[in-house]
Length: 442
Image: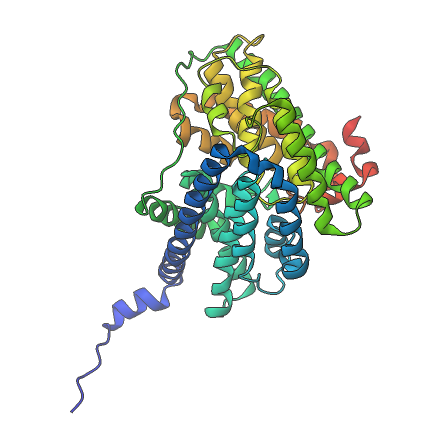
């Protein structure tokens, strides 16, 4: 005689399975936990590998001469095996707007290999792009496994992006808001609040459980808020926003130039690798390649050469424009922190505060994510800098216009009323069509 099957009492069964709110909560907590554990573990592996690649390159700098060879290998890897995933972050954003076929899981290992190779041999790139692609490709596999509807697929992609961002930087709140904010400029996807926050928190906890740490930053002194200091923050924010425009525009221009001049894609990173390698040995320093964490940390406490941010822009634009793999965000942290440090020569705010403001504000302007960047500042530097960071991020966001590093971003709500004709357009369409941006420039 078989044992009787356990059944929940009817009131409890109704509460847990028939109540749509409880069902949504349980469903997305479970899915987000799975995404968080997998993406957080992948981020831990990525961060450990990245530390190894950086240490090895700094110990044996001659390896930078092999950057063109590494570029050719990366180019061939994507040309012959990864054409369908070479759009990277933009592919993720496009699938949130217009769901198509499931993103291939091969995106994760390809971008991991490509990014480690880029850093090992001396490219100037970041890590957020890799984390987002790992998170998005892993999470999208649950669309097929769980047979999710298109609406749920949008939520799971947002959760994967949030998990990747939150775990790779150790900022789970900023990661969640970034996932909600990044794909649609000017609007948030509120129905994805629970998946984004849960996945980002689970991913961050998982990365920490693997005992993988993150860089700590400290702003030594934050002055009292005053009308004068607010004005200085506004001025700095405007400069940070214009710097974001220069960075995104130059990176796009380098990519377009190389595509126009070199027909065979694997040779484009070869050209970029030659330029970067010659520049490194010509300058006699590896300061402007890789992540540049030591310079970022130093920018909070000591005066740096005023041109540091310019050289980092050039190195990163050539690296990423030539189709090496990695992200833009950590180089943007370097650029922003170094620019903030340079502004301290004539803006009467503490150097550490200006570096921290630039750290997040240039990123806010380039990624069009002012809310995520403000929360990131609070998570990284403490709540005392919150108002200054918010002012810088918001002003940088408005001054960067409808441009940015993510071409697949869609203008959900224009930054200014006079540019409402841009709504519904993608950032890439606006950046490649000068006539559409002509009115904005006047």
